[in-house]
Image (cartoon, rainbow, N blue to C red; front, side):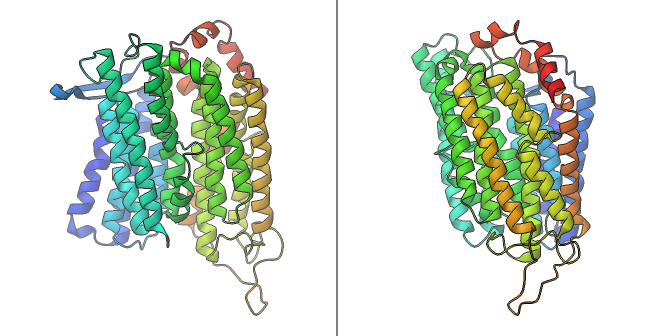
Length: 510
């Protein structure tokens, strides 16, 4: 059943390339959208069959492949990976639907989007270390071409920088995987939680360091982040939606699944340093965002800061904090996708993202009132206003991390205040005041926003509010898996002191 999620987008990508009848851009778009929608619908169907009270992997599939290399086709899904698969397939549909109907080279473009979906889903479902690495590298190829071909003026530079950084990330991850299998004496690359039990603490720290480097680039964490703003600024809006909404989550997912999951002892040793690293990322991302005048670059730097919250919760390594990691990943995916969609509409209608030029876009007659209203929703969610999913995710992060790392948590809370500062600057400069004027002094009349441009943003805004009001719908997906996820002493000690009641209390306080 899981293979359907993998091979439908892959086969669809091949069909789009091979069939000559899909030269028409709109026809190629609708074929790609149909395939992506089917994959999303199949994900929801699996959700109805999914046992959220089970702790292990479900719908597992095993197939012999290259036994001499220890590589097998092993896939499965649990409460950690399933929410991310849903998010990926949803945002893939949004990206395809929101793409320009008159896109140049449409067959290649939409086949790359489907191939990107194939690589990301494969990474989330992989239960073999080498198979995960293969899918992790596969997603690099379509994303490089999507930026290099359909990006902005400096797309070549941004795509090459992304390629180099991601190549280093892959090398570090592969080196850690190879070292783990070699030192443990395992016969294959099958994912087993006890792989590192026979390793010394020094060996575990070295291998975990490789994973921190590799996944830290992908997340990205300061100072490994410099590829991200360039990639976002030069990428088209649909690609930015996928990059921020899903692809960054490969880094946090990998850090949780393989870093914490395989090296709990080494993780507990490095946890204070990881929490401090999170503080640096949160504050640097927020302060740098304040200094930006490009709307898209401001949102890009906000992602650097918000991903730091995930590292803080993961470093705390308690049952509640690990739930907070998943909720924050989903929350950030929805909010960042919404913000990039709205920035894309503003750029399409005005021809600029410069906050020193834009103003008055909330004008109800000649401006973009709906887009401005949705931007306010996105800004409120990102700043952690109650009633939005951003509030409950950050509340869970701070509530669970404060007893473990009080100083680092309090410093990260400052980042929430700074988030409100830079997004208020964005809204105030771009959407309030007198509408943009032409060189002759007359007020411009902006083109109306069509349904294709506003409907994906409306959908994401609804989800942000719904999950903000009903956060248990997110928590229930992952609660059982997280309760049994880590075998580290820190988690084992707190399973009796931080049970279901504490999680329920946190949700009730919201």
